[in-house]
Length: 302
Length: 282
Picture 1 (cartoon, rainbow over the protein chains, first blue to last red):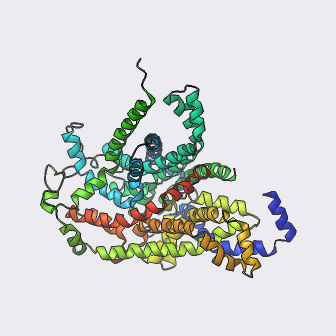
Picture 2 (tube, rainbow over the protein chains, first blue to last red; picture 1 turned 180 degrees about the vertical axis):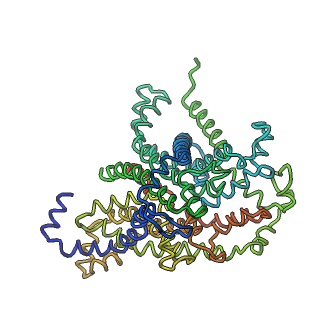
Picture 3 (tube, each protein chain N blue to C red; picture 1 turned 120 degrees about the vertical axis):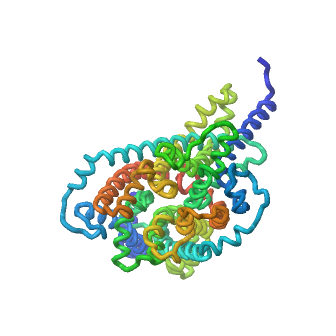
């Protein structure tokens, strides 16, 4: 890197750098206007009282942040977002590793199995969430029917009707969407572990479990970290699943931070509060995002 | 303990793997199975208690009738406009930027790459309030363009990273040769680099197309006229109605999912390695 900087310096910054900036300008400009500036703008809105049309009225300083931090609702929503993210990512990781291990066994038809596992991720996500509305239907849905006839549940609930079960249903649909990515990444990582390591372990008399524990796991640990971070961000950000299944209801029982922001703004027209919540969300997301980028960047440079 | 031969052990492991795989596949594909059987059911069959597994008298009627029940053709048109618009705008801004970060030296390059990586994770929800206000201010509210710009901007960071990878992989010598033959830098990009990077470019184009096709939040927020709704919003409105005919809705869902499903399979490997970084490069 330092070498190339030196050569540029020697040549002078003229042509090449100017061209680079010109080529980057449209992308950077659009990103500043529609991504960076809006974050700054949302922060500004949060400092003012707003009317229902989201027009800025009186300056209020940081009062909304003080209000938010002292309100119980917000802590419930933040707590639920964390529960949501941690549970879902954990489940996605475990399912992902399990499926990757299964697909790593050589048998006829495993390529087809691999393709079939991708379908939930590959199909239009808002629309496959809508499919779940029908699957989860308490009377006509085939899920409750299956649970009844297999005896798994004699009296299955109206899933989206009560807070607790609605949250579980949303959580499951989010997990379901996230599993394929994890499985694919882990499978690719496992296949990149040199075969010779396994052979060496076999010669040393390692059992199947030992080979997994001491060869596979260390081999995929780096990718495990990146994939779980990425998955945490996606899970935390999953607006579609909750909004399409329950809109955060019943009675706010399935709201996580991201749907709460949307509800406060576009449904309840509490723009100042929603803006402050956006700033919160942004701070949480960028922390995780920076950690992810650091690690990814290091990998790329290796 | 009986020593099992290696062959038998492998066979047992295989059998076990196939068995568990089948169970997991049933769980993972359940909603699609439900869609595939229910879309051939008549209203009488689909609203039967207890539900039937398979249609007793399979019918294609849902596939014909749904076009009259809801403006499905209009939704398709809107989805196509948004998806293609996102592809065009994104490609126009990402290709030059991707070329710059991959092939040119300039101060601040590392910072720019890093900034693209971090912004890749931004949530549309965080900025949707401001974007809504901006879109109103510049009179783009209720236009396809508002959704297209938002989608193109939100796909830009990831696409630039992908392109950075593809462009960096092309030997410098090829470009130099073209320039010796009298091509300008931009000419060399157009005539030499782009054709070589074409497979990569196809990946990013498909990725942005899918992103636009699946857009939900920006369409939900910016579009107000029903005739401009894409499939995601159109079908969502339909789901919310009490008198909804699910047989028709599932037929429509099938038609809406199919194009992106096929496209996705073409690029899944590249997407996975692009998202997960160096460790799983193809």
